[in-house]
Every structure is written in C-alpha cells, then in structure tokens.
Amino acid sequence: MKKKKSKKIQPKSNKNNQELGQTKNSAKLVLFIFGLGPIIGITIFLYSKGFFNSPNM
Image (cartoon, rainbow, N blue to C red):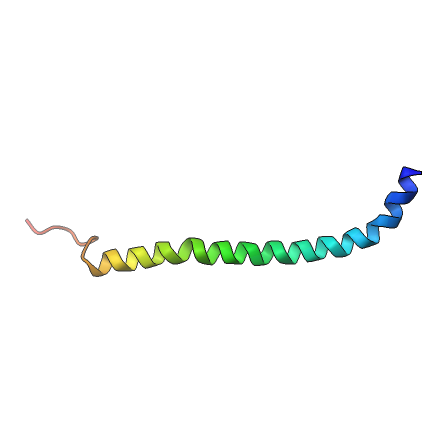
C-alpha cells in the first residue's frame, strides 16, 4: 500500500522539486551578490585609501 501511495505522490513532488530548484538558484544568487558585494566594496575602499600601496622607506 505504501508503494502505491508513493507512486501517486511522485508527479506532484517533481513539480515541487522544480520550484525548490528555482528558489535554491535564486537564493544562491542573492547570497553570492550579498556575499561578494561588501568584499569588493571594502577592497575598493581600502585601495582608494592607499592600504595596498607599499610604504616608502
């Protein structure tokens, strides 16, 4: 009986899996942007302040 129920549920779960895949991809994109955005901003800020320039002796 459990096998028959699982076969009926599979088509619905496939649609849910596709929707979850899309949300996972968008979540990865958002985390990628908000993860690297501040890092790039900080490096540009520090570069503009001369943080990466070698000190003159």
